Length: 136
Image (cartoon, rainbow, N blue to C red):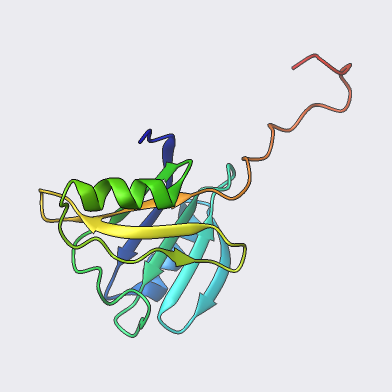
């Protein structure tokens, strides 16, 4: 398995609303989902930050501090690899609406982490329209 980057961070918080407002208003992240128990924000490079409130029903198994999501090419292969290595608390693979997959596992430090597929390449850096193609 090859880790290609950290593209997601999730955090359980007792004060999701204030934390979401801080990330949005002070740190400049864009809120893309804000529903009871869950806030999702995105960064300029498409990385995501998700906040889980005490009333979140989808993330109640994440009982440690912030969870980092590591990007892999093939989540099913990575899942099999961790099961073969007898890693503890490996969850089933979940699928999003866009069919990307992810799962959680508990590392030796006792914390949960995620392995995830990124369904699309990151958008290219914006080009200056006043420059000729090929110039950066």
